[in-house]
Length: 400
Ligand SMILES: Cc1cc2nc3c(=O)[nH]c(=O)nc-3n(C[C@H](O)[C@H](O)[C@H](O)COP(=O)(O)OP(=O)(O)OC[C@H]3O[C@@H](n4cnc5c(N)ncnc54)[C@H](O)[C@@H]3O)c2cc1C
Image (cartoon, rainbow, N blue to C red; front, side, top):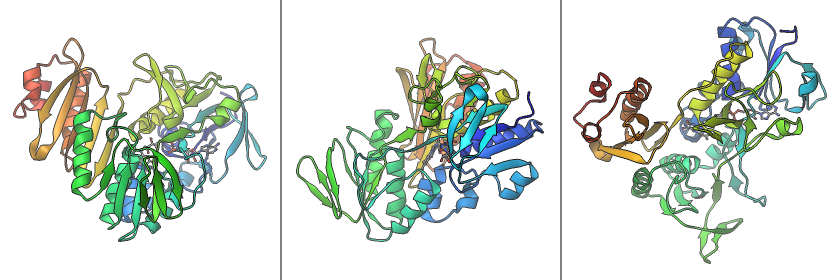
């Protein structure tokens, strides 16, 4: 390795985790973490939950404090976007004109909230801490809030806003909530829960326009409101890599080692497009940012380990917990849990568990999903009747 530093572009979750891992793993050379946000690396899940409610602050979501970064000798360049990358010369340029050489580079540039085509007044988005603070200050008792998008961000904002006493209406273009990622039974449970909590949820809705005090639907209806939050997905920050000639698709493409098409350049987190089950895809989850951040760090140190972690995510709404692990298959077994919760098991043709999805009050599914993860890893042949029976413990099945 040359004397040039290792550099991480993107001081979010994956980038921050990679920097900390490099030190944990004994890398003692120069290490630079560059981010365009003015903050320490932080985790985003609380932005739509505890931080939006006001029960957590930025320090509570940060991966570490600045004293720890200093102690570890991690040079954090905050508030400075990287504007250019020249992989053939192993160097990059900051927007302020500075050039930095690197021996190895990790691109962990995440994404930004997908915008509606026209800029509108009183429309907010939620991806960053600063956007969460702006939204938090607008959520007051009685605020009439329209949320465009019935995916996780929209639904979590809806739940938090109800807790703040707002009147909430969720508009979803599709026939069910979070329909791209959730099975119908859990979409239906989410719909029932939100409606029971007083949220007006409209499915199959087409938006015409947003005005100062109302949202106009294509069918002619006008929904008066004080504020609109748009949660229609995320746009991966691939421009830096694309302009540098790296292979990109919907994200920055990597091989099994999280290595991009440029030598010594890796990618991790939401921006990383990797092969899962033979197909290129990105994962926009905490678990993936954590696992790939760690993994890319190991490979930057020359370990050459293929990335094999299981996907998974969670969401919390009104004290209910949703958790998934692994992948979805057509062979689904359902187990009823107490209080109308449900646990779904996804088996392959041989009866081995490939994935699971749980929904229950509190965090009780966390334990079940951990056991499912162990069942997937252990490749225990499972019987459908035992999986469906709530009285058969997953621990018992694990012992075979
Ligand atoms: C509101 C919200 C709630 C969520 N809740 C959950 C949840 O409950 N469960 C779950 O599993 N996942 C959740 N997620 C998803 C999870 O937070 C993300 O998957 C994770 O943050 C991705 O981490 P990352 O490091 O890849 O990207 P990010 O955390 O987005 O970090 C990327 C960083 O790179 C910076 N950057 C981009 N370009 C440049 C550049 N050119 N130069 C310098 N810096 C740059 C960005 O500004 C950003 O700071 C949530 C996300 C959001 C927004």
